[in-house]
Image (cartoon, rainbow, N blue to C red; front, top):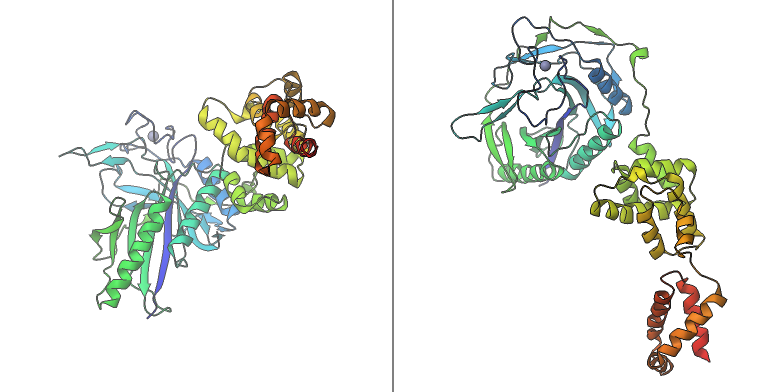
Length: 465
Ligand SMILES: [Zn+2]
């Protein structure tokens, strides 16, 4: 018997704006001092009036362009009524019948809608016999995205969430850090015997890492399938995800659909959206970058590492703009992903922006023309941070340019052979691998500047005699 799993996702993302959604308070939900970024509006004092944040609306419209969604020509904000201590007005300003965006798709997953609302305050219940509430987060602009129920496995859901995070970051809409709650995923999961019919839907909330998204979906598919196989019935409910036990657990059983008594917020104006209001996408989208980097011959893994790095990618993109051959692109991406990343990890105070693009390009060109070898390149790389001189000047001053000139290396070869008669004897007795030791000695003597290939050739010739 085969079963079909159907998954739809709901994702909330905190938007990166200067101020909150309906007041002038600073938008900084992770601000250390609780309840300091508040005002009568976001604390819901009687008689206060909200004013919609244009920057937040533009960010949602920008997102719509990037995912080819249909932008509404008319939109409005609604009140979603419910009582909870983290929602001071006893309603949340959200959108119901007229979301800003409908349709569109991302990572081959169709989207249903995207709307804008305000975040709630942050409540904590782990203090003992009382709870605390921090209103710094109350009123932070929150984008809610809903996908169509078209996902059938955990991996596709995880990939969708990763692609969404990348897009939000690329567009500068949200930092979308899942651990910080800047991007929160909920999954609706059902399993059915009949592929044409949906099974009973279970909602898993508060998934705050990609691993949790995939783990919770895998667990739910297995749990629901087993229940059905054993003749049981899946209960429609909301479940949480236990990251330690790697299990979902019942949070609350839904008896009836919640009635939020949505109605248009009379304190906010209706909105007409015309083409001229739509913001332009000013950056290259992840898929455009993928094509561009593929055309430069970069392998897939390198492309994904680059485009998901806010440090490396702007630097690499600038290099691409000045023009790179395939060989240069491959070298540049390798040095950025391994060596530059290692340097930045060891010295967090260094900034990649302090490397001049021309200097880095010169270093790559020197590798291509074999003026330096990879060992010297690594040494020079460290010196490029905050450098006033280019790598060629530095290498020349320090005598680090690679020596490929045979005449100048012959004396090195002779002196190494003279100092290692035992190794020479071993080689002549047939143990040819020891030649690598001799090349190593030659590299040491030239402080790494010799071209190892030239040295090897010279040693082979010298040992023939
Ligand atoms: Zn405020």
